[in-house]
Image 1 (cartoon, rainbow, N blue to C red):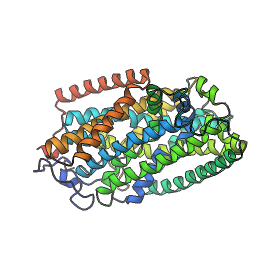
Image 2 (image 1 turned 135 degrees about the horizontal axis):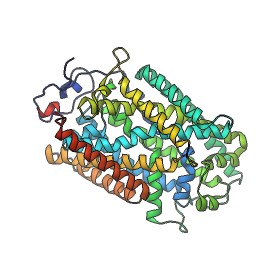
Image 3 (image 1 turned 135 degrees about the vertical axis):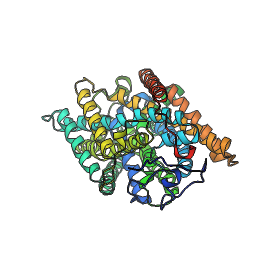
Image 4 (image 1 turned 90 degrees about the horizontal axis):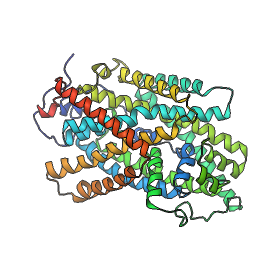
Length: 476
């Protein structure tokens, strides 16, 4: 087999298009994955990854953490991610390859930095499928109590692994069906919720309390809640992992990320605002939290009866356990593939199926890790959903910080760009907002996150000392 890391003469090539022979080949790699995804496919993928009804599953945690100002938490989260999406768009045009922030930091700054950025976002990508399976399984167990949570975990993992194995085109088709279903459920809730509020069936809270409440507001409180709410936005960045399966211009990657984020952010704010005004006992929810994870379903029941409770709970289970985890598994396998291709992870992870053209071993590894994590967490009293959520977010946000630095280093310092807004101002503002979120994140998540970083640093030292430091094609 030919070495995919062949030579390339230009130290920093101009942004390549996604199609033809000037895509990954321009950077010294072979085109192994199948290019078949359009802008629409990418947009749908991002929306499904973020899940238009994502707040259903973590509504209670964010509501409690924000002192009831859940719409504000999601608005700040959307703003932070908008700056991050802009940085992703710039780097995806410069380096249209799989690997996400691992690729961008590695080629935009230096390969060791890229490894550490990839290592941190692995904390997000590797854990999030298991977290999604767990949340979905808990939701299904709340409806069908006779079936244990662990059975649902196994079922979801097996189903998604089969779909991903069948190829990215089949996955894209399933994504569209899932997205339509989620939007229908969301539309039903929004319409019924507004009618219920118009009829005076709300909890009596001030209509603006979900965006600002002087009795509970504090900067640290809100940013702490944002660190949880950000979980709903993770996924737009997953679009970048499909760069080598994009059949259109490299610009489609950035455009689809920004479009998906804008649409999802709007939907998140609207649905959480309505639900916040319908929660039966907001004071108790703020004080005691949502141990059962049913706060949103309770709000839906308050709007129109138990049937809407069932509908929203089942929709959450399907969206998180099938649709979202399906694309999360696909994105994670592409990241593992990209890192293995550069000898940063074991070589067996770079194996691509000869006919389906998917990273088959990476796909199976993600399934195995997700299954093990999900089954382990089912033994915990609270399933560890809160801890896993903050840990996933910490890994992603840490990698996003490096992404913003990559934009400045690559475009301003290295390329001499004078596009101050996109290549300096936006990354700096995005970096500052994310720092505020990370600083106010759960302390336990911070500790575990830094431990993970320390392990990554040791792995990097091991790779360098054992001669596994990669020589990227454009650096030869």
